[in-house]
Amino acid sequence: MKGIIYNVFEAFCLERCGADTYELILDDCGLADHVFIGPASYDDGLLRTLAGAAGPRLGMKEGDLHRALGRFAFSHLAARMGAFVAPFRDPKAFLMTVDSIVHLEVQKLLPDARPPRFQIEDLGHDHLVMLYESPRQMYDFAEGLLEGVAAHFGRSVSIERTLVNLATGPGCRFELRFGADPWS
Ligand code: HEM
Image 1 (cartoon, protein in one colour):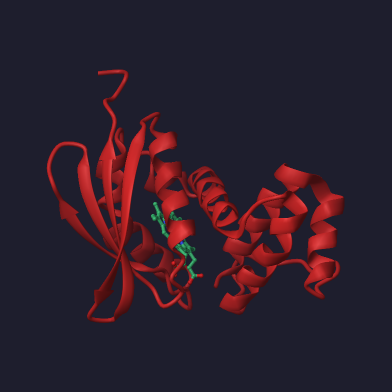
Image 2 (spheres, rainbow, N blue to C red):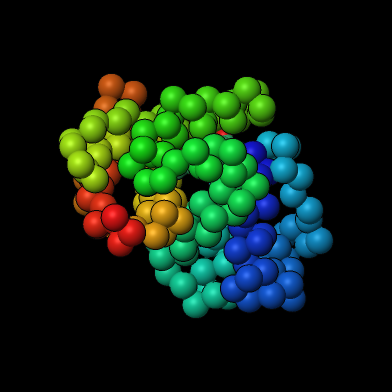
């Protein structure tokens, strides 16, 4: 996984518990004083290890931590790569570009990035299905990102999540219904 995701993890920990506790989390993983470089690549399992160490230190269960990290990740990514988000006024229109534009462009910028794939089904007004495919199976993180997108656009969202078998292996179906736009 790219270092940018580890940078998100660091920023999340600094916000939640400060630098001293973040250092303790690194220590717990045998990574004292480690600095993650955004464009570098790191072992996928390392994020799981770091999150496993952060859970008890932050008083969070693993699934809750991954979801909160996903919500935080979206605001972090949107702040740094706002050009992907700025053209949109609603979360559904933006999400329909995540696979075909955002992650595609990410792969051009960072050729060894392996972002997940999403198949999209447009089910009508404020209603969308996203089929998530990734060998990393980061379902909680993905759900948090989706919540982060809704929050970014000031919308509520209900997310129904179902585990599915896809041609490429296990995946997850997210069915999203956005609440009414308070400004329209
Ligand atoms: C500005 C918007 C976004 C940017 C710039 C972005 C970029 C990235 C990058 C760089 C990675 C790391 C890939 C790797 O290391 O191989 C990643 C992973 C990921 N992205 Fe995005 N992303 C964005 C929005 C989203 C959204 C809205 C979703 C929706 C769920 C999403 C889902 C994921 C997931 C679940 C991963 C974790 C890796 C995996 O599941 O295999 N991303 N993204």
